[in-house]
Image (cartoon, rainbow, N blue to C red; front, side, top):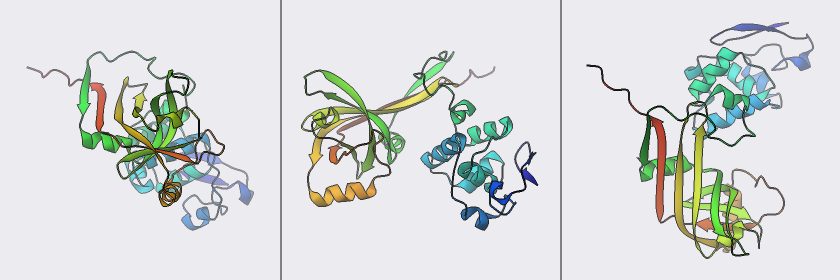
Length: 258
């Protein structure tokens, strides 16, 4: 059997003839109905593509249009283990405003910022609206607190943004739980290692423990994901920002030609 994956570098992949090995179970990539009957089992690249697409609020159709590939192939890539060509990977990276290396997962175990600085960087302040947009609805951020032993600590947490409040789940007595009752700092950022640019957003405000039962149930219902650390984490902490600031590093505009 031969499947053609339409893309900027359309190529041919030969598969075994058994139905279970085909992307849709029928031998055609373009059959949306058949593909929907197959349980999703994405590879790492597919997971990263889907996550970047959702983080930017893009539909599959819009992402495929930007990358100049078919929506059916993008659906297959996100739902099944696959190995897209280099040209397709670069096209998707461009469509998602990221890098091919990031989609491959390269450098995930290294701290960001080891690349060279830009030759002519520009550091811009972000306004309130842009800061809120970058905070989005959920993600992973870092909360700076005074730990129970009195020492300063910065801890990563899965967070949600609900009605302009930053909320996260933790355990009673944990370091993140120590945020309640104090004014704390909460920071999120993104670094594009290949392009030596990125942004950061800092929120500062009082933190409180959410105790009203209906509010706790509503937060649990609206949560986008379980805490990555696992275990029982049913204490919700809410941060109401009184100050929201951000910075973005980008290349400076080239000098005008005379």
